[in-house]
Length: 154
Image (cartoon, rainbow, N blue to C red; front, side, top):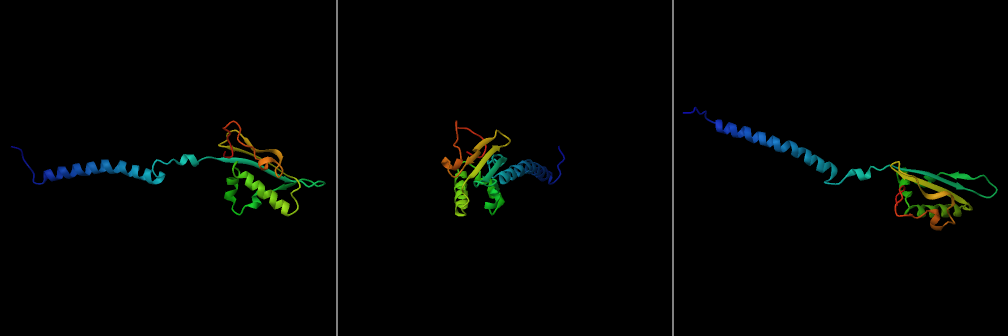
């Protein structure tokens, strides 16, 4: 005949319940944390792109030395500047620059060049070197050729 302690079954059941709870809660905590941090299956890696653009604008009036234009002066917030250097936004910015300098009587010769790359990939000319942007088609912004491309946001 086996010796029984009163409440031993309760103790064993309690130990098993605590053990199972720990086995469920520890992985569940990581799963819930991952879902909260990444908002489900959303991947933040798609936003970890690094854009680099070489931008140059020159205002040239006949008989004068070409004057470099700082494009940053036309933006209130500095974090908006890189959003402009995409194929779909750049013609609007160039249209603005042409109207801005024409209103001041200085849009004689506005030259520009914009070259961009994504994640240190190949450099893509969005505006070829020394393009006269006010008189060029699409304000000097080249269209995507061959489907792919690279930098600057097609």
